[in-house]
Length: 358
Image 1 (cartoon, helix red, strand yellow):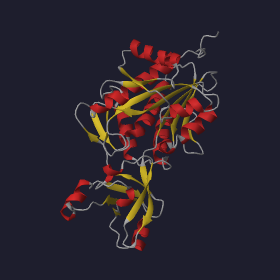
Image 2 (cartoon, rainbow, N blue to C red):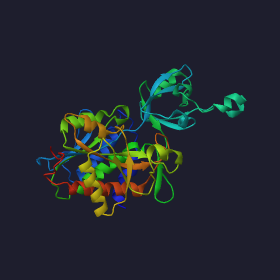
Image 3 (tube, helix red, strand yellow):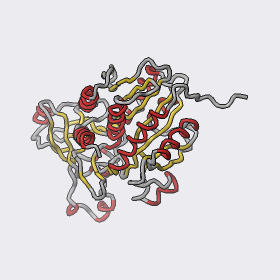
Image 4 (cartoon, one colour):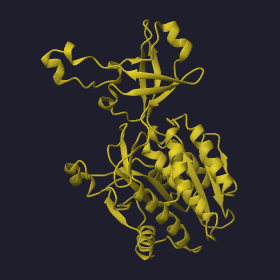
């Protein structure tokens, strides 16, 4: 495992990057690319990090991983100084009860907790529904004594994330807040660093995109500008090895068995064929996941922008999605980097994406 890359990943997931507030993560990734002598590195007006290799080649390829994570905004502060939060993205409310939270305050990070009612004070019936269903049911305690005191520390609209960091597990697996999808932005960045040393035949545009969790925003805006012929989206996908009842709906996807390649009407058959052949030739472990319709990733944004790119989805299996303990295999992440790099090198300059004509 590349220790330089692993260090980058640890730094990235330690930075709060909720949708709309991704800048610190983008700055870290951009600096990493510049040190690797990747040119044309810039953050655009929307906040997307972009870089390009071999820009004059006629065939444009876009590789993308979104850098935002789910989070919160301070919505309301009551007279006693307790905060109530608005969700940013698909927050799974029961998982945040009694969790720690860190808020971007007026003078720096402000620590808080989602308060929980003691079980001793609940009736038997209340205990059956102890997990809150709505975010408005949970107050955040930052230690303030009044509304004015709270406003000295935070302001309305201050962004926040659950304070749950890197936790190594067995067999090279890790749990952390926000692997969805800082892991994808990391993979695209590390692939770009490796490819900067290679001779590629295509114009390769790398994007760490913003605000995917609230509508694929950065995927749409960058795809419109780049107008790629080919799009390779790197995201996470549902692992079904922990909750085995999910296999019937998402397939048999497990941690430690390699990158996941999407199969279905969204994905271009000839591009998928190239990716899977490359994986086989390089002995890179892969899994297949069938998706009967467009998924909520930026593969869809690239497919549906302008005249539409030919797209493939590469995903890292993830347990416990949209929770503070998202869990991946680092082996899967690094196999996905290997597959992305090898696939880009395998794309010919004259790759014909058109079907056989009548």
